[in-house]
Image (cartoon, rainbow, N blue to C red; front, side):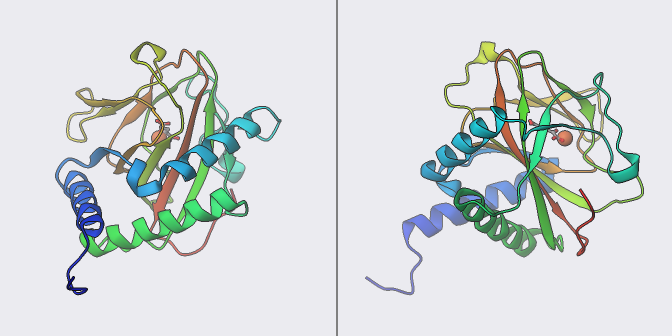
Length: 219
Ligand SMILES: O=C(O)CCC(=O)C(=O)O
Ligand SMILES: [Fe+2]
């Protein structure tokens, strides 16, 4: 075989990345099946890790804003979060996947993404996150948001959909994503309003933000 030709896997991977980049540039968002890109073994390892964290007191009430501006408002969001440090084997493997994705997005969309931050999120039954943009005032540096879902066997009646709104007319719903294991949603952090509808069972996810600034801020 001619080694200079890309293998079918590479071609599939390139196509997946092109679909993602086209969705982001044309509509500001895209939902995809990430099972091949991330790998089933890693997805299950991440799901097992967040399940353990959910049973301890590692998951902290999420807020809005950061540092001294942090506000915890239960009428807006009810999830709990734990930031990933990349220290456990599944987190280290995931960080490689996310960094590769950062490079591929830069290659296709010239976004100048420098780094990313990621947290696990857990929603208990009844929890939600009202419509919002993923930005902090005065710190416009989150560019692309990625949410990776970690729930095996999520059914339509389980609720907890990510609801995405049109970036040009924010009352128009333009899509819903079920938080099934391996499903991914990506969107432009500061442009696309979105919300998490109330979940009817425990819901696990991993959210990541690709950023244009170089220096990590205190979490
Ligand atoms: O879990 C999701 O589907 C989205 C979460 C979200 O919007 C956020 O954490 O900012
Ligand atoms: Fe969000």
